[in-house]
Image (cartoon, rainbow, N blue to C red; front, side, top):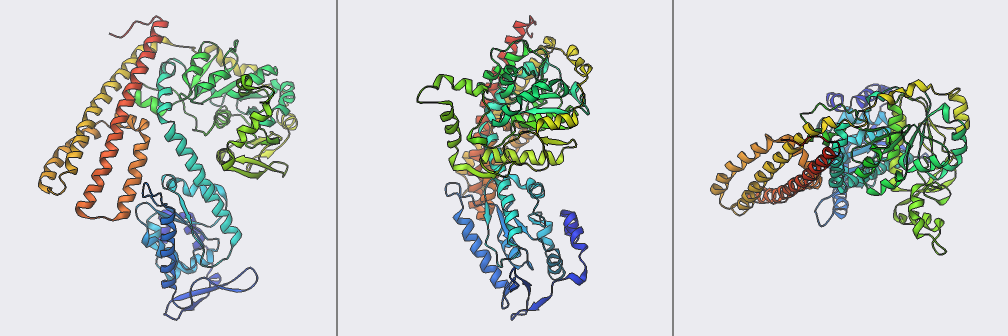
Length: 639
């Protein structure tokens, strides 16, 4: 109970509340151990463990799981899965047998709704080591949000896969299946999110650095915090159902605050609807098409992530009010600068950003339109979106808009999945949008404001109220939004060029620090390669180790710039994580373990060195951007 209280206090409380009268009766086994018998779904007796030798049965089961895990191992990287899902805790024999075989950060998730059974098991067996390790998670409820919350600390380990084991006894099948699905969905969410981060890390850093002059020269969004407290807000996304709500939104425009994603800006303007805010975070230059050719945007405030493509920021900053959100990478580059920029939560999509902005504004309720998250009527986008305009040159007799929409869906054939829409009908979504749905449902559950889904189409969503837009506005927006709430726009500084020169000096300082780290890295890599050839000569190896320790100390003294490099070398961190796990799993000793560690370090340090080179190039490009802006705004160059 002490171990449980330290590492799973809620579970400890639930188990402590079990009455002794509810304990599960135990039966002796032939070898002198204990088993228990429960009643199956048809009233049949079901033994959870062998009546003869439950420990041996558990060992054989765990051996089979090792074989199953090996079959799921990536042969190129020798990386087995690190998460093992087990149906039912029983008396814990099989869980303990599997736990003894785990290495590194591998962990077990057990679904077990029977608290009396858990209490009985813990009364007779000591599993405090498993609980104290923080590598055993017991799910006593099948709520997706609870499953996600408990798995969050193991996100990196989930990247290596999940082994779904076969149960010893089949009881509570529906419960176990629900938890199974939630674990699989979270693993998919982590995989999608992390792959996106890893694949776009350099591009994201380039965008942030290219936007750095605008970042330092424009105001924070803090002026917007709770500015529209109590006002209803409509978050407009680009799902296929959006066109259904345009007429209603146009009629009621002055009664709500409108927050639009960048994809919907042109369709809304074409429909005579001017949003109050538009959000942007997409890293690709295709996003500039959502803003190109637009003029007269003084009443539409762009709120963007600094990772948005700089062409979007460049287009907008001369046409309308603009605010960039706080960014940790930018803060590391400008670490001596007192950064005034507020953060919003990091979302998967621009629609998540729009929802977080509505929360930041203090809006209540937050009404969603165009948030289908599925292929309503077998189309991907709402009619008239900017992407339809980008497709125009390809359209013709043998390539219609409908064909392009269908091709966009079919490209994801391998990851399509059926879901229920808000009317209970079956539609398709894909793995990516399903990940977005999971994030939204977690956000809705935590949101202090009321959330209304007025999409009138698309996937059914938890933790929000489905309601037609007209009814939602009539019920929650009785009158116009006070125009005085928008007076802040007159006080915004469009572009304070005086901030450019001191910020440029900080970027120059970071470049010099990165070049210093690169020199340390090159010496380190050469030394490690030399040590790899000296493993059989421990005396010579130890002499080189003295210098290696000195180099490591020099890197630790430059921890801030090292963190900057890690932003552009995130594959290096993932590689090291995987290799550390593999080395622990192989359990090599002595010189062979040294060789494995040195081979790991050769590749890791090599990637860090490449990251230094990449970051130095990006910083030089950033300095050029500062020089161009300083010339445009007639700012005297640095000495």
